[in-house]
Length: 618
Image (cartoon, rainbow, N blue to C red; front, side, top):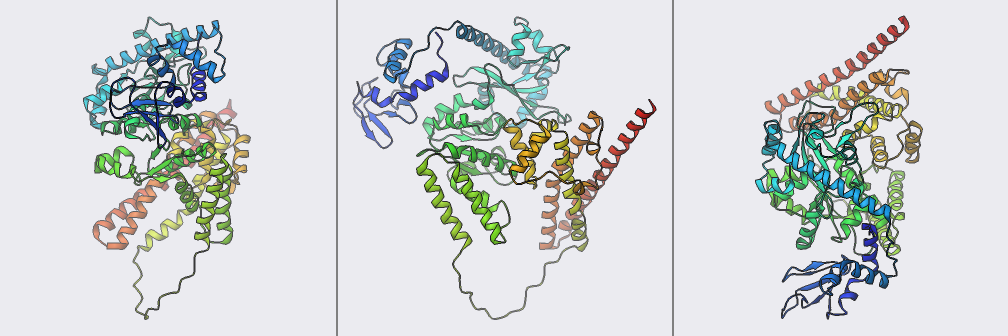
């Protein structure tokens, strides 16, 4: 018979570990846990602990560790199946009957594990070849030590489209495709999924390879995604997998915490710095299943996402998904990195002690929720403040646990009242003095920034209109848009829809925007920009190319404008020659950017006119 992981999890959840252990071992209550003298070795003072919430026992003396099934096999001496049958009878669960299809599926999974293990061994070997020099150079630039490189199993996928197939010729092509290692295209020869990339194996909770993450090495390939993960396969489900969980789980039992970061390289950087209890989702927002996996390890995982706008959006997506699942003592903590930095950047600049200081003082989930909504929109009128309260209460309504919902409602109402109706304070009398001189500014800069405000809105509106007209392009550019600092909230809504697996159809996406109180862009908003993707009946390849270029400009713009604003403020403060030169240099870049934008729009229009003329002639 085959026992699925889901069935075994249900069995463990239905049986209280302490009640089983207490039949043969005397337990003493100690806070949220139980303590006892270890039954596996002789000791005078108790070092054996039992934690029902986490579902495991652990001895700090001899290292004995396991769940309720492991207890029955190790302490009672039962076989695995005998232990399962006895616990199932106690829990009122029927043991699944033998299933030939399940047995065949288990055999199939074993074969796929062999494929992935063979691929990992081959990738590791390719890292040491002359062709793997680029990958070795990248690893050297990250300054990973030999132990870290060995532990995470870095490898290299050669550039050839058939290299993996030739190396793993003992496996049928159908197995390589099913394992996610090759891509099958209609009427074309299948080809290797990972090519000319640094590879990292992805493991399941038992430490078996179930997929790969691969990083691009050629910076010139701007259209290729920076990171590429295996697709969903019979072994790999990105929504049910956390990178590095098989190492972080045991480490979390020692440290009492689990740290969630955005990407695999962040996990590896933390491990190299001595923080072994870090995991990362697989390129998507945290799912409900992943949150439950984290809560089995610790009661309050720490989210440590990047300090940019995209990182904070990712943190809020995790918060909103966690709210309906909250239960007593289980929540999230949030650490905000310095602006523009990820954990690896902070460690390199200030050392691991700086990151540890942030992890030691995280925000609560409630604090994150309050601060995000308070700062999400201007609060200049009574209507604005009423909107803040409505947003807060909408979040509260998603909480399922009645006690937690009531406590959140009361706390957020108290904070809103203190913010919206602060006590009046008497102003301190001061003798009238001479007013401070106004800060000096370059009027030319101010004039040009105001002049470009309209084009700034036009570009955002044009790209939004293009994505709604060509929704299939959202999947291609979702990562870039998610990590860009875009002010228009409609981009975040579209990225959320992509992450949630919503149908990429114009009518459906417009409905999602309307449900959030947002509307599709009006053509008047982007009338000054005649991109090819905005013109009816434009050839698909031209529309795709022009939209990709427009998105490139949209993503580049916020960083450029922020740098220009900072340089202008610095010049206003000290009026130095250096500050003025930096301001002028960035202003020149901004003017070049605007010229590129105008040229791109007109160039796309000319290309479409030429294509139309040729079609008419034919």
